[in-house]
Image 1 (cartoon, rainbow, N blue to C red):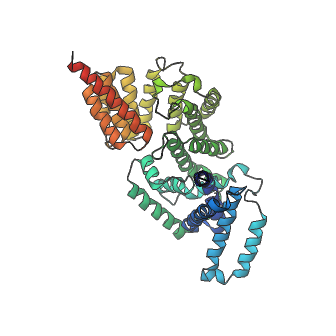
Image 2: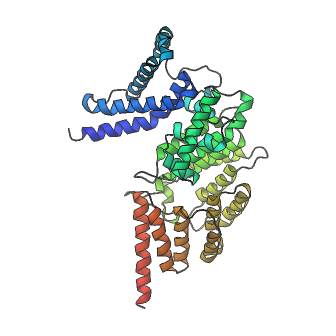
Image 3: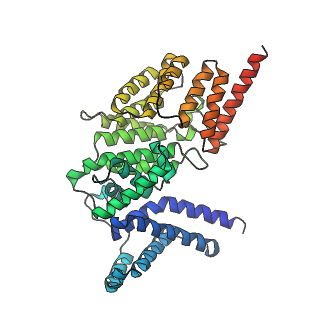
Length: 428
């Protein structure tokens, strides 16, 4: 009996994570994107009902179907309580009968790849009448289930700023009465970039979580890959940049099994067991990288995928083509003003030209004082350069910013190593 609550909680969290986006997308399709916030509340209430019911009645044989039916009934009950819906009771009853009889997955055969409910709502969220930042934030919150804090980490901004952005985006959807439908084929490309940016950030959150207990959330990575594959195989969205992003995801996901040890501790790139890298994913990634070369487009995804390919195809850390990686970063900084890209380029500078050059390049990076990776990189180069006291200072700053248990353990270990090295210097 003592294990029941924990197993029930695990099942509830698992199905909420994997089913909530589908439920939100489906209900928004039935009730309209203008009711997006209301739909999210209904889905949240369905989860609360599960938490109240499952510990005593047991987890249903089909938890996803249970959540779906509960959410539908809650939605209809709430609509009946609204005056304007009370006047249309007969229409509601007819709609209820129709919804209960038609599977959620039913959709016309045409454009099948974009009939995925999650992708459909992503294209609604990425409506051109919303700002680019609002499009991506809304897609990440509504469909990917990321919290405002996690989205803030992706944008390197404050949680309050993201919360305000989400409120404004939902208000704008209501004001414009945006329809829940796929745009015409010729309108897909103008929304595609925001959809790809959302999937890119979703994958990044899975690759390196900004909160929680674990460094890697592989479920987010695989969901991002699944959705990007659907786009890559569609005639109107399978553009070079889509293949480039898919290549980047596959090449990066191939290294997931080696990023932590058996205890969940972080392993740096040079510490990883490369025999654990998924060679099938690497080959698939290289194939999509080739497909991305069609045409004249050169995007950030192309260059990042090229960098990932350099890492994934190197036989060892020592044989990694850092000069090629630096050249790709040199191109990448010309395409974007991202401080994170400048940080990663500075790390490549240090790998090619030495630790002192890396520290000098890092000193020129602006706007990332509260970004953990900046202080981690400074600590690593300072340690390589023999400045163990300075390295410990940088690692302590990183430790103060660490949100994950594995990060805190990792930086605690590095600080101890620096202190030991400094102590040995003083006794010589």
